[in-house]
Image 1 (cartoon, rainbow, N blue to C red):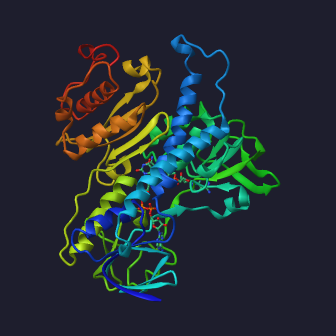
Image 2 (image 1 turned 90 degrees about the vertical axis):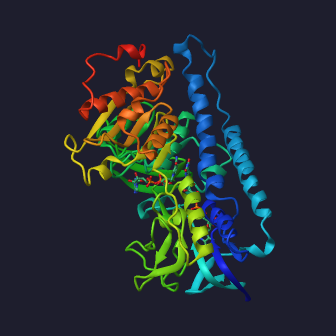
Image 3 (image 1 turned 180 degrees about the vertical axis):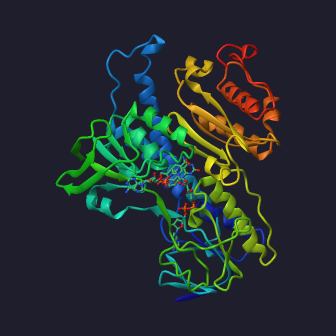
Length: 489
Ligand SMILES: Cc1cc2nc3c(=O)[nH]c(=O)nc-3n(C[C@H](O)[C@H](O)[C@H](O)COP(=O)(O)OP(=O)(O)OC[C@H]3O[C@@H](n4cnc5c(N)ncnc54)[C@H](O)[C@@H]3O)c2cc1C
Ligand SMILES: NC(=O)c1ccc[n+]([C@@H]2O[C@H](COP(=O)([O-])OP(=O)(O)OC[C@H]3O[C@@H](n4cnc5c(N)ncnc54)[C@H](O)[C@@H]3O)[C@@H](O)[C@H]2O)c1
């Protein structure tokens, strides 16, 4: 065993760890970054980027197949080259990974260690069986991994997860997707659009992380127009066979019990932080009943088992709070600065919550969700919901993307915009607009004073804001379609 002494050790060279490394180095040259797997980050290797590459291919195919209403046609069908689609995904992914490998290459060699890390005590970390690091402060940035519930494990070698699906050399013929959360919805729809026979099974009614029940049921209807999605499926008898996996389920439409064979089962059933085997108990870190460290959201500092503040910090998916890329890099930066300047801690800047699902229609969640608001607010007394259905919205109709809803939440009395949930065309852009307004703590009235161009999807947001303004009793209700807004606003 080699011995090293260091001010700050960072466990995990993912997005959070890399951001933490850069921040910690501003305070001390004595920083070691430990990586137990491959460099390149989950986002670039198996997460954000390969999934968006697959979705882009799927949407291109979908658009090509739906040009007839615009007065154009493709004489024969669109031919999907199952090999070429996956090759583009892998090559695109590898290019994104390469940019990260290049940046890590530039870090001094003495700052990098390879191998799985585990705490031996509160100031010692063993890395594989080759190095013992004595550290003053540590940052846990170990990320998360797909969780495969026990019944699904019967699919054996026919199980895919987001860790393995992008390595396929060919699109499969059929996939049973379990979990209509964010991963399952994005990948399930993309596969279906690429001609794969997909059935998407859920367990508890959730779809794409939507919290607003009205939007959830709209989503189930909309997505079922394209592919089979049962958010409360009754499935049983999952069995691997010679060339696939068999799944028995109750058909949501006919009520019949069916058994179907699929090439693969995609387990999109959530992710768990990579904390097992890390020896957090040896580091004296207090954890909750799920084994996740208790920590302060503003400083990212963990609590120790005596109820005091620890010299260990936690950032990114490892803390299971907001498992998104921009949150991982923000948290890494805050943890890195605080570990670097420890014990002089600062509360880091936390942005308003924003999450986007790249389905079609897209889903965006901004600020406070409806269940969060309802912890303190009663609908109709303390808060109201401004609504818009995109079915008749002018620009959405022009583009034939007129599906989905916007729900905007505002507070009585203050007129403050609290948050929003959207199942809407191009919600990635609308969601950003709303997140910026929310972070600026704008009132509904202030938002309505902003410019809205015609004809745009943003005009749909204005109509929902007007509805909200009226419900908050700040303005009279619109009697008619807003005529001064232009047609279809
Ligand atoms: C399919 C998919 C699509 C996604 N799409 C999006 C998206 O569009 N937008 C978005 O914002 N987010 C998206 N995400 C989420 C996003 O990828 C993650 O939130 C983010 O990558 C987390 O970064 P991290 O640094 O916490 O973890 P990671 O990047 O996973 O880094 C953790 C690192 O720690 C290492 N490690 C673990 N344990 C140890 C140990 N004991 N010792 C040493 N090293 C260890 C791991 O090998 C890994 O390299 C997606 C995720 C998935 C799965
Ligand atoms: N666009 C994005 O930003 C993006 C994309 C993908 C992933 N992510 C991140 O990754 C995280 C993990 O995503 P995820 O989709 O794996 O998890 P998730 O928690 O969003 O969804 C998991 C789903 O699986 C269901 N489920 C659990 N066990 C099941 C079972 N036995 N049978 C059927 N369904 C079951 C759950 O009810 C839930 O609906 C997300 O929270 C998100 O933060 C983000």
